[in-house]
Image (cartoon, rainbow, N blue to C red; front, side, top):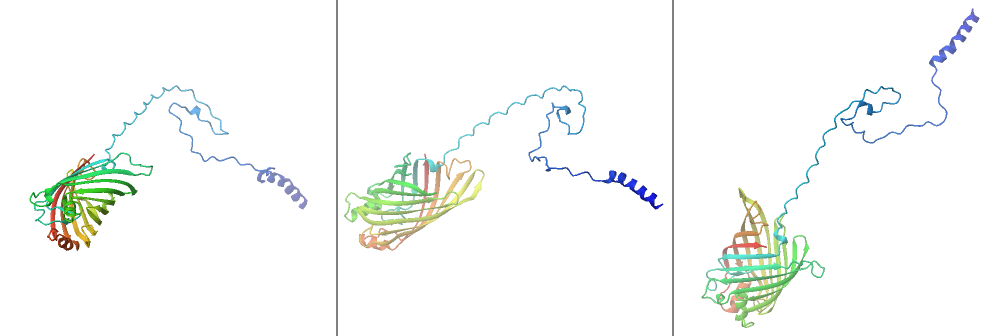
Length: 350
């Protein structure tokens, strides 16, 4: 019995092994198919049929009957875009400027005003400047500019109104930093306070004064800061040094209605001098604070960076320590100790 059972088990083992045994491991190196990470193929066009799509490997497919389809109508090419209209160049790239001082209630030089005995009815003036187109002189990024002033003090009975105020300046300059320009120039003055003082001190019988000057101008249109620094040295008529320092801030859109808006400019200045008005006259000529209203149109044709602008303004000025020294030297009270001045100025950039 035991022998029969062992024979039956020996006959069953080969059959069971044929069913449950794992497949044999192949000999040699194992190879792997490459995997593509590219974007999937584009979907077939409407004119394609299922026969154009390859069947997966190992699957047998029967291609359907060919189908004829009408070609899709051609889509017209889009029209080329129209070129944009050229923008108006900002005034900073223009060459010329024409300014008009319509009226100023007091005549002043760098904030130092004269009394009503010498200027009782204010004054008016026109000034112009032109920067030559070549702004790369000597391949150094230099420009040169000429400017002039012609004005009249409205009081025919005083000494200052005997001669019209005339000034001429020539300078060569460069933008040293963004929004900051420096200029070295020559200036002459005939008439006005400089001319009268030159004649009264006996240094220029024709009411004529000349000087060299260095100016730094700063104007940041985006942030609103502006200012200037001027140093001058007089070498004829009036001899000595003078300076003028001003700093200000522009408040934008303080008022707006429709297409019209208003900016407000606030600034303060100081003007020292050292021997310019005469020997021993050293100190501060004047202090000043100023507020100017700058209207503009939102369409860009007036004010701000437009070609035409107008600014009504008001200024308070106080004479410095040099006022008494000048009065003692001339033996006359020519310098006013306090002035509240109003004016209207306009301009055209071209």
